[in-house]
Image (cartoon, helix red, strand yellow):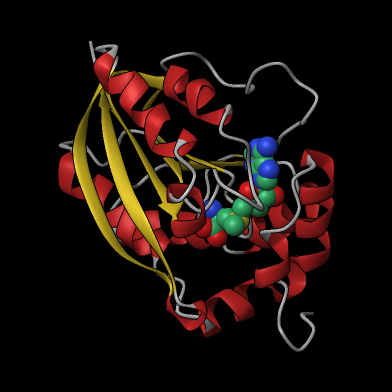
Length: 208
Ligand SMILES: C[S@@+](CC[C@H](N)C(=O)[O-])C[C@H]1O[C@@H](n2cnc3c(N)ncnc32)[C@H](O)[C@@H]1O
């Protein structure tokens, strides 16, 4: 479980992908309690933004970087009926499995060149708290966009730490200006109010 100042603050300082996975594995048992104690709001915010934009909530959604399943639980609470999850950290996945909100759960291999899912295979993909300092690399953004079906949605949160780095908003702009997606939803709001960290929730709609 977390030390006095918790594991949340320290995770933002790690940037090696395998070290990040191992850090989450060690954190898994205490993750939910620490996040909930800090008012973790992004799962619900991303899930509700996606739900407000889809017409068919029975279409499968992929919760990429699902962790312990807080984001999958929020997607189900928002009305999504079929949610798949994926994460590289086995202990996080074990906690996710126990929540019984996922249809399928996949352990990701960080050495793989691409995610183990069909291109354009999901009507919606969620990446909550996934891309940013202390979590997944920005290169995941392009990979996840390929998993979204034409006209489908990619919902994600970029926390304040990510938004302070011009590379993160520039990645969104690259997809929009390249005609590959449009911004269907954008809202700044709470992420971890207990740590005074906010996040911008985006939903991109992939072009046909
Ligand atoms: C802050 S947690 C968010 C988990 C969950 N989405 C939530 O909202 O609670 C970040 C998750 O990303 C996973 N992760 C880290 N690097 C990753 C990568 N390269 N690809 C996919 N997932 C990764 C971690 O194992 C961890 O479970």
